[in-house]
Amino acid sequence: MRVYECAIIGGGIAGLQAAIQLGRYRHSVVVVDAGDGRSTLCRGYHNLLGWPDGVSGETLRRAGRLQAGRYGVTFIDGVATAVRREPAAGAAAGNGRAAGPEAAGGPGGGSREDGLFVVTLADGAEVRALRLLIATGVKDRIPDWPELRPCLGVSVFICPDCDGWETTGRRTIVLGAGDAGANLAMELTPWTRDIVYVNHERTPLDPAVAVMLREAGIPMIEAPVERLLADDGHLRGVRLADGAELEAERAFLGFGGNEVRSSLAAMLGARLSSSRHIEVDPRTKLTSVPHVWAAGDVTVHSEQTAIAMGDGLQAAIWMHKSLTLREPLPPAAKG
Image (cartoon, rainbow, N blue to C red; front, side):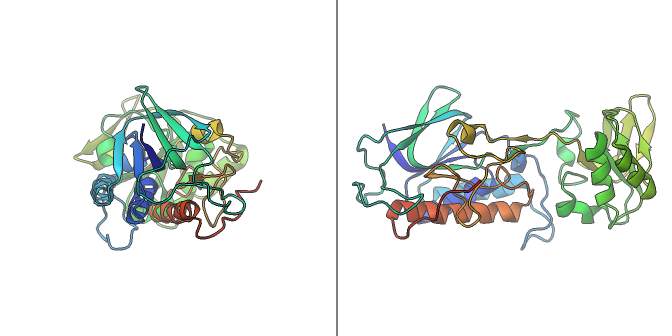
């Protein structure tokens, strides 16, 4: 069975940027992509250099795959369900460079063949590699309203740092649950004061948060939302379960409880934070497990596409160094 030099779990922004860089180093690279990350949902990133009118996640993903493919990167569409480490059996990996037992590369380094990572997919297939990058991201907890997906990144948003600007001068509804939605509503006040918070799940607020919400002049409606009112991605408002309708041009989602997809890292014993994000060395993106890197929102809950690109690029550079032993690696992530 083929042994790749680098396996990347996650074909979103961080994973694609890493794949491009590793491909340019002429390493053999495979990307396992479940195709259900944040970048598959957003129809418009508006704060990226060079895209003043916005760019969709699908556009970036499609371009990234084509670009990585030029460098021989292999893509497998599937879900990684497990990962384990096995002792190396002397198998050489794909680009023709010597794969013998070179001298150790310092803390976090080691030879090219001191172990193989075996990634198991949902269909039972296995992928083997010398180095592993986990870029599995975060899954947002959002309602299954049929009208929602066409609006994401166009008139309905999740991240105020990315898209608070889009509410400027527009009536905005925050749809959420408890403190998470209330806090998000208050974060939007630099751009608009015409905000209504709909506590869709009727989750009780912390008394201090409730006071701050009132002081900010943001009314709260405790009622479930039946559906969004939208035309081709352009929000007109929402209809509540009691039939009442609220008009708005913009909406933000603030439900909290997002899933940090770090379970594969946990299987390998990687150190996780209290929020279950993977802890990494800030310089190299190396986890606490030798030869395992992580990048993107699964490590830093930044929700920024540009940062995900930088993380993926940074991780790829240090994966390359570990394979060629050009430079000793610093220690793995500290607790």
